[in-house]
Image (cartoon, rainbow, N blue to C red):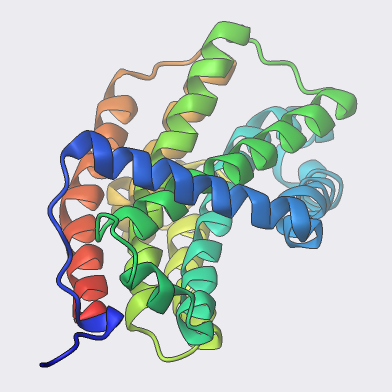
Length: 268
């Protein structure tokens, strides 16, 4: 009689609600990891403060003529940039878990195949929220004024968290296919730097050369920055908002199935 090993046991089918329950349990696992190793929150606490201070006080006078004016301009954009950098960590963490054999244990459990991946993405909501909260709190101390009102600011934060969760699926896929955590980090930065710096994050688009403006205007980060900035400061948000939502939906539609497929291949 042949005995199946846990890794060879076929995954049972689950109703969507059962799969969601499994994902929430594994999201709680991700949050518990943060509580037990709080030093991993450095990138969502100290790093945003350093970036905000550097850009406002080093470049604010030269770019905007006033550190206060530049603070108003750059804070919403830095919220976007830092959230995207935070999203890259999920790929590194997943790759490390795979290397340690954690996912071998998940494969032997009667849970939905996608639950470890969805749980990891949901668990990162804490990191996104903390990153945004730190930047807003420090910005208020420095003199930031959300002229769009707090309701629109809350909407901007929700939009940013939602988009960052969608982008996380890109790095989930990278974490599953890369051979090492270092490779994940290198690939993630290679993607994030052109997207964040080649956008309307730090300077107005019309100050750039024409060839660069062509890239910046189709860059999804530009749409997100413009939407968050418009919500927080009371500017127009219609076009950048629907463009951001469209990009978010497209990213999930493409990369979430690819990530689940890559995970199933590893679990086969």
